[in-house]
Length: 372
Ligand SMILES: Cc1cc2nc3c(=O)[nH]c(=O)nc-3n(C[C@H](O)[C@H](O)[C@H](O)COP(=O)(O)O)c2cc1C
Ligand SMILES: CCCCCCC(=O)C(=O)O
Picture 1 (cartoon, rainbow, N blue to C red):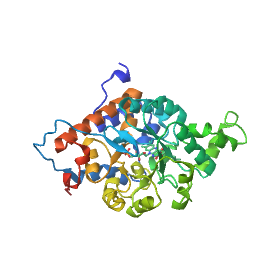
Picture 2: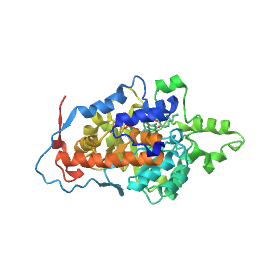
Picture 3: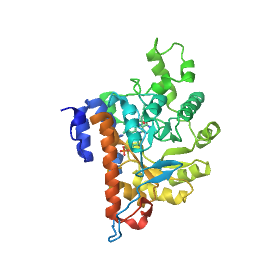
Picture 4: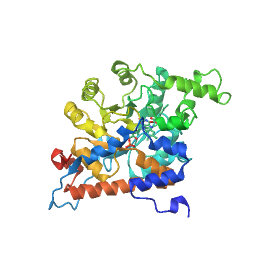
């Protein structure tokens, strides 16, 4: 029986196990692992267990609204697919398969700067679906601007700038394997098709791929990035700009003051600073600081429908789904991602009904209680 015909797992843990069977150890570890001792990776999930939903009964939940709109983008079940780079290490169709699956359900897809396929190829696969572009700020500003302009032209409707990677996290298990997909060229498509990037090379990639990838590595990180510099994005795009990777409420205030349009509370799935706060624990002070001025989204640790309800109850406007959908990709390509999306929609719907809500917008602080 072909993988795509097999019954795909419903539980996150079985999906992860199937992905492990489908992949060789290096790419599987790249997705599964976190930084350091993986305390934060683990905390991202256990933080959800410290909150319990306190359901209401006899509320007539026969009709339920799961959708929300964020910055002009419709989210059918209050989640978006998170930017995940290098998806070609998981399946030959990589982001193309994920973007097609997202479009089939009308779920927005965030394409990473370090995708295996270029943002134009992903846009073509996503078709009439909705998509945002995730930006890693390049130390060559003209390359950054070029990526943003290409994203605008290709129908991306928001820019999500990830700010939690001034340097890469100390990912011990990837170091053990000496496995770095960016260095292998698995996330280079956007650069190798960029006229400004290409103009910087002394030889075209076809003649010197090693040199092209070395140049990419040399401009990829910008540890000198500041609020002042990132504000320059406003001068080069009229699209909404969302800051991803905020954990401190003071930074959330700065994002509002700097005129950004949204925040993603995220610790990058525990892949950057091990020992930092879980996203869920960071959420409430940020929601208070932002005071409804801009949307607040959350990722890192969303594994089931009840997690979505808990995040919304604690003030998130929507969530990003990360590892689960790329495990689906590894196990079954486009069908695998479709399966995961379908199950999350059903699971959110079930959790909403059993919480006693008729719409996700009804989730509030009274929906949950801190239990330990
Ligand atoms: C394999 C992998 C690659 C990732 N690549 C990116 C990326 O290119 N850009 C980005 O902003 N975040 C990236 N992230 C972080 C995700 O967007 C998201 O914050 C994280 O997956 C959330 O944690 P969770 O998957 O455990 O829920 C990546 C995460 C994983 C697991
Ligand atoms: C050199 C590290 C680049 C990593 C880009 C993808 C990503 O964000 C990740 O977490 O992995």
